[in-house]
Length: 140
Image (cartoon, rainbow, N blue to C red; front, side, top):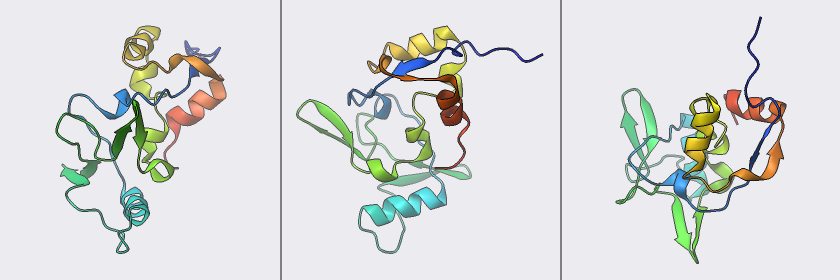
């Protein structure tokens, strides 16, 4: 018998452009070769390659780099808002926020994350199918 997910009734989330999900302590934003190519072309690298300014190798994978202070290399701040400068081609990891397995594990993990993300528990309602689609998404 399968266990019912605690968020079966849905969850609310609307991005407030605070930038908290794109900043903070060092972390990893995993990018595939295809995502790297799309990002590179979007920022004008006709050869489809990112430089070490934008991406770093971590083991056998690649992650976006961070600026001093912890902001993602592609996070831009102006007029009190934080915006992704590669939003149309942002990596899958970014596209699925905040519907990540670790965040959705328990109501406590969701609410703990919501203490740093003012868009959680407000705004647009996502039903169970929408949440699960994002949580389990493997490609964009």
